[in-house]
Length: 266
Image (cartoon, rainbow, N blue to C red; front, side):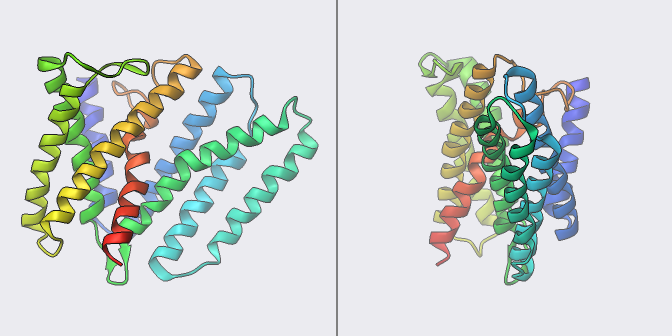
């Protein structure tokens, strides 16, 4: 019951950010960026010997996200000044904090920005265009991921025999991967029906790219958790684990979709 209730709330909040308008998108995904960074830096501090400046890094990630919102929606570049100030502050602060290994602290800090804040900031390129706010690509991304996760699990449970990447995730199978890919590609036909302005070939390509990159994102987060010796990234979503457990696929899928759309829309 707990898993179902909080799963439903998670989907409602996420879809509100995707479907309603640009303000809801900016507020909800800006907040998600902050929560994901907080969870990551908390995980690092609790399970490694590295100290990081958590408030500074969370502020830096939020500044990057807001700068990308302003740039993608209005073409303003001034927002990036705040992010550049964060970079300078991160380096300068290590002169005064007297940490045992300042290079590691900076490395872990910037890794969080690159791994979490950069992909979520790139989501602005999927929802803003010269024609205003449009949600179809971002909505499709989440639908493809959800279908892939659901049917990969079902197919893997029923038919899974050949391990996909046993060293990192022993339960994933090639059969499960194929099942998730099949149903995600199938759903791309529905997206072409409701959004025919985008060709079927592009919708199919998007579904394949999301499944491939999302699977790699899932495996990469598993690698992080195995390295740190934890089962879940956190417990922010009761019954589901942490924010990163829910967004691991998304963090790889967003930049992959952005790259694909850049080339097909040139």
